[in-house]
Image 1 (tube, one colour):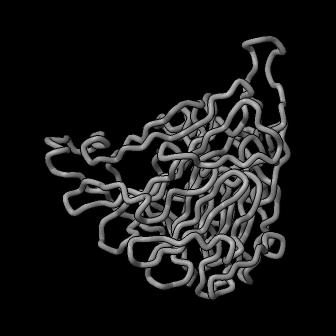
Image 2 (spheres, rainbow, N blue to C red):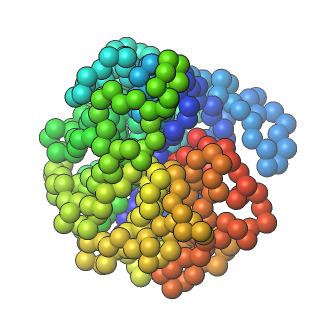
Length: 399
């Protein structure tokens, strides 16, 4: 039996601005594969008389105070367009869900290739909010040792050493970081010792046992090959510079860290058949063909979407086109961002949903039960295919 642990491994891509987290009460959906689910419970006084099916913003009431730091430069660096993900998990095993939020870092107009953004104070710290018994939260970031390093983007939660405590892997630009949960409310940065630092622009990540050896491995998506070069996009006149489209930057392979045990990992993307270049923003896990092995789906931005079929021997083959999930119903690529497996029609088979950019139809692929999918966005009578707002990572909801 394969073990899967993944909580909110996605990143967001809003307009560059200072973004305030708004906490909405709702459960994490549980697709096949055993992804954790739970509900953050607010104080009764904060909720009041809520009608069934309605959501109430309790951010301030439960004391979750977080502003995401994003750059605002005249150079229109592509990194400025990328927000961050979130993790909802119980880091201290008190049966209450806590919240971890990655954060950016300061950047300026004149950065040179090779520059590594650095956190320079509380405004750029990552944040860990511990849930108290009354449903409110307290900021325990510094006590836990999770202020972070560099420009953080995504996060994946998993107990990689099977000690009963969930560990954190934080992705970012020019370096990722693995934090071991010490079991006493603190974390230790074990990136260098574990060999999981990686390079480039990493986005989403997922913990999954790729070879069924009882140890969680780590799949890390990367976006594009990008650095701080001064690339002008848009009209060449003052005030008309624009953010570049990802099409002008090369795709890049994911990173795959095999868990060798004893806290050590080895990068094996090529050996595992997962080294197909992409522009990955979201990852989803499920046994879509019901052969007993966990498969991977990757949402790519403005190129073919990827579906990795598990061959059962610890290796994978990319089968997006063969399974008919690589493009939309008209054979066109789209800006894939958020992605999730879920059985939307209750036929016992995991379907695949991919969100994308404004003015593009969300892609919903119905599982045919024969290792292929049908593009179902057109035939739905709901407004799913009409939505045009920007949506990114989700487990059937967006942050």
